Image (cartoon, rainbow, N blue to C red; front, side, top):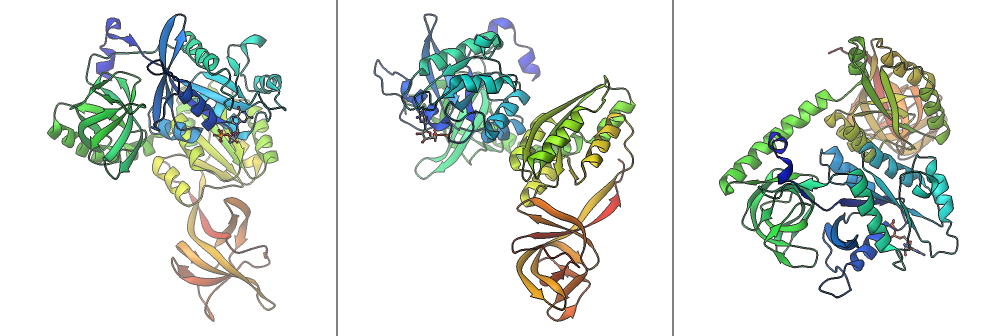
Length: 521
Ligand code: GDP
């Protein structure tokens, strides 16, 4: 990074904007990327790009100049957020696709929240204007609610009406991307040094070995360069562009397929050029170790309500980013309203960067990582590998089943006076395989213990597809075969009785937990 800072302005040359296409499912992201790919004229011939690689470049005439634009060829914001969560900032501009015959939908809002959180300017493509039910004015109207105000309404966001299907107004959309880039961003990079960049996608090809699509972000990448990407390394044996042409060198913002890596890099991994093969290998090995350390350190360092509490006590100004998830939209709205009405004073900027209904997903956790946010789960949870992922990455998820408690917690933290907290420690989880109705014992949930230990007398909660049905139950009966037992461990089957609570079905999870006072560190 010090090296970047040492660059003088003369070293910097303009580079192409890098664009990601986001939006609700079926609004036409894939079709739009297709239309853009086909709009490229090569060697005087229309017909466009035929190869599918993870990113491609097209050119458009802009104020008498032929200018390149790079597109990341993965529609949807999951890829965008996953990369950002890993610290890679790839995208300069987001195209938000909204179908004119449908309107603003949940993933439209999610996508624009992601772009806003990343401080990436947005161009809106109002798609499907060929459709009989198209109402482009309605889209503009709806998006004003999310502070995307069209230029024609006095705002600063460019809206372009397009039809991906009939390839209408694609040039206008590209023009809008360049206008937005020129107005909002200073896109430059120094081409006169060893290359650095980011892996966009990577896969193992039968004939060609590990193939990585990388985006050069600075410097020039050349055939023969020794490179390290994440913990994989190699020598650039060949580089191919989106037309299948062999390239000898790649400049900033140029995506290329690189052949010659030893293993498959991960999307979002950065790459650098090393002086020689041996150094490349050593760096890769060191990185692997460092990566592990860094992710541990990061996990420890992420914001928690306790940190905020402490920072405020010391008089530091902070921002608190929150992501709200709930079981029904009514509770999410109620929680959001109440939080926004909190008197947080001058010191804290409370921002709700995303909200939604349903279990806490990988995408929510990635956004929390990228924006250093805390997730509040109201009657919903992160399950299985998502819970592990959040824990590993140090993303704080706080679970509530009473709105008032959530509000009080946040308020206390914002006042710098959070009380010692009791945390819920999960002791075991069992999955219900079959429910037996017994006149003598009530319903018995024939289950298998999936993790930990399930204990008779423990507090229990029921989750169905990530949504908490009930908590504060008591596990009153626990049997193996015909015997009453006190505990059952992971991997074993058992019959579970939850007192008078009988609303269980196959596939539900019974999680047992206890409350412990949280250690202050
Ligand atoms: P994605 O899920 O956002 O990637 O959407 P797709 O590109 O797969 O498009 C979803 C559906 O909308 C497909 O049936 C497309 O043919 C259709 N579609 C996409 N663009 C247009 C358009 O401009 N006009 C019309 N009428 N249909 C479109």
